[in-house]
Image 1: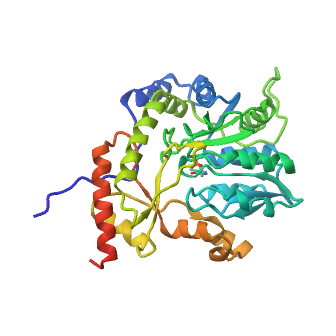
Image 2: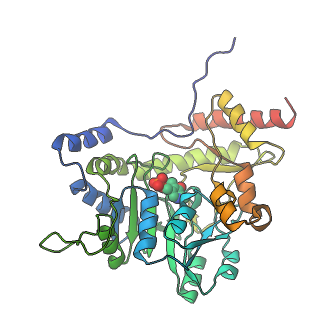
Image 3: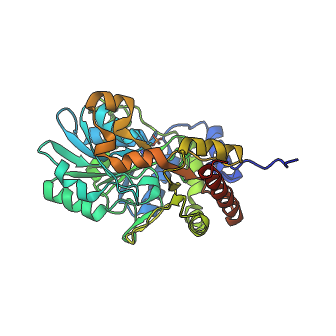
Length: 378
Ligand SMILES: *Cc1c(COP(=O)(O)O)cnc(C)c1O
């Protein structure tokens, strides 16, 4: 008889009673939308990232959409994005009417391969939008140099990277535009939520106008200067996430320890572990590995679930998704071999508080054994 093992999900938001109580307090106050908690949330994210200005919006996709829209990027323009990310990165470029130009990733980091960007820059290119995949910074210095050389906007999809660092500075520090998400799959959550940070006050003011129907920020009489969206965040969502932010750095160091258990224990014959360049501190939104090509990833996910462990594929090879495939007809295996491989063989494993090092130890044992069994046809 096997004893019933507990199931370890891929991710559960680490909400404390005090987080929930602070959201409930806002609900009881009756002031539900965009109030003092949203403002304090913006201030706190500036505090954490060192950014000068911030605007909270309804989710991480809305933030990216607003940045592109505010910059006037649209019809006839091109935006360079990695071929491998969550689909929202490419969708927002399409939604403003511009063309996403995909660049392959480096398999070791799953981030955009900076050596392949320049050849994709044309007279139509307006921006480069790197993703800090799974919470690890892309090579911002190299990308910034290209943006300066060709006069392009650098827009960071930092959805997963709150708390991560580049060259000793927090992601979002001194950025022209960086976008964070607070979806439950990210480190701290408001349910749905997003934040743009920038060192450019005009950009943030423009976004604050656009998120609220185009309403002017400073006029005495209510007036609307632009056709805007309703991309506001509610105040109880802001209260929920604000309360969690006090634990962010302690949570990060705990996750760093969990990651080190994966590094120590995962069998390198079966799994390629991420390479962390010296310029970055990983925020560990996900622990992502590439499976040995003898292992069928989807089957592996099923076998792990049966063994009591939640896992999933990491991200998509975006140009291979139906809409983009039909529109651009790119040969992804040939043009983006690394994005394709990460999409086929990539796997994310649980890494979150309150999991303990002993839990990760247990997960690695199960994961190694499952891989060995699959390879030996057991
Ligand atoms: C989560 C995520 C998004 C979208 O954020 P939402 O808040 O879910 O809209 C965009 N880009 C990347 C890389 C993400 O991981």
